[in-house]
Length: 180
Image (cartoon, rainbow, N blue to C red):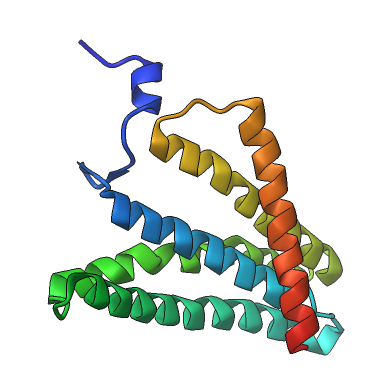
């Protein structure tokens, strides 16, 4: 008998064809949030002039790539401390895989900035759309966490998502004030 839509929606998160372990799920959620916050922090202070538009794309991609490497390294070190043994090659690859959401945070923002760079719309519009996209991704985290727990979305999920987006925006503002 084929599963109905309700059963499909409440299955554990799958990675390839097996359930994702809670530690891996937590690591991926962490990478997702961290990557989005840092990409948003890279986007906000950008200003565009005709000759500098490509730099915005490079900054966003550079932020994501360097954060991906740092996240994978830090998670590997943390895992070594948790287990008390050095990671095997497959465990190191798992940490790389768990850090991929950092990279995904930059894909759409970089594409939107690139579209502005190519002149299909104004670079400032690309930046605004990129920023809105990242804030929406951060807000969606609450839904993803609920899904991992097997919970149905509620009004609380929605308001929690708004609070999460607001908190991420404050974090980005603090980072910008302290580092720019």
